[in-house]
Amino acid sequence: MTVPETAALTDVLGKLQLEHWLGPLLALQAERMSPSAHGDFEHWQEVVTRLRSASNDAERRRFLLQLAPWRKGPFDIGGVHIDAEWRSDLKWQRVAGAIAPLADRRVLDVGCGNGYYALRMADAGAVAVLGIDPTLLYVMQFLAVIAHLPSQPVAVLPLRLHELPGACHAFDSTFSMGVLYHQRSPLEHLQQLRATLRRGGQLVLETIYMPGEESCACTPPDRYARMKNVWLLPTLTELTTWLRRSGFRDVEIVDTTITTSEEQRSTQWMSFESLAEALDPEDSTRTVEGWPAPHRVVATATAP
Ligand SMILES: C[S@@+](CC[C@H](N)C(=O)[O-])C[C@H]1O[C@@H](n2cnc3c(N)ncnc32)[C@H](O)[C@@H]1O
Picture 1 (cartoon, rainbow, N blue to C red):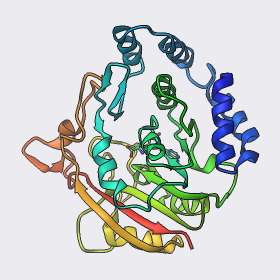
Picture 2 (picture 1 turned 180 degrees about the horizontal axis):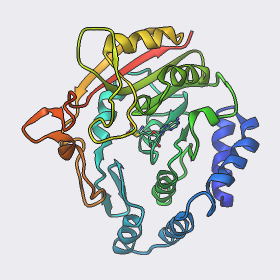
Picture 3 (picture 1 turned 90 degrees about the vertical axis):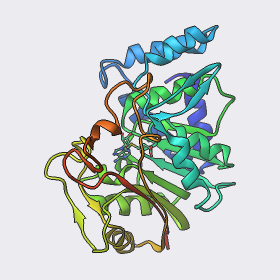
């Protein structure tokens, strides 16, 4: 961890009134952001360092491509446009207008990826945003992105939700977007999210759901849309029940959408297979495994 990175985290935790988290979070960060935690760490760190002093866009582009795959974006860094797999700006359009305004709010973004949304949240006026995501490459991408930005009240740490130091009840808004279906115990995830929120704080939950009127959830026996880490997909009624049983009130479904190949696709910055290859070539309303194609919901709820 460099001196400016420690200073940025100190500043963010101060704004979040979570100064007492600094020691435990720095210790976890030092453990995770190390050559022993990931064989590519030193290479990524060198890329970020060299990017900071890159003198032209061709050089910047070359370094940024070394941090591929870029799943979330787009970003414009200097004159380089990162056309990531996901048009995350489209999700942000659906979310931003449907939630409590972020001005002056202390925000937690769980499963923040490379910090795309955390930076949008700061732009929307949040006092500070703490993003957490266990995937180290995404944390390195965040460091690359902010290398060319003026100072932001945003920190991204390589952590899972349950690794935060205790139930803090400190945040005005907590986001969990694209994370719930990756949890083996979604109700536990919802309870942990609730413990991050102050009384009256807002949860913004975005996830995949199963279409249908009944109250039930499906566990794919193997893969869902080629992803092997999808555990439980609820209908909207079931999701509402999960939120209420986890202690939330004022549960509202504020948006539903079916993911399109305009929003999720392979690009030069993420050259592996994407949504098109996960859908049945004969029937794009089905995944290759025969499940309904990804339907996504944005729900909001209040912590009492
Ligand atoms: C599908 S991506 C969603 C990224 C972004 N939030 C979005 O909506 O586009 C899910 C992310 O959640 C992270 N993740 C999975 N389990 C997590 C946990 N328990 N705590 C924090 N992040 C988690 C993964 O590393 C991954 O980057």
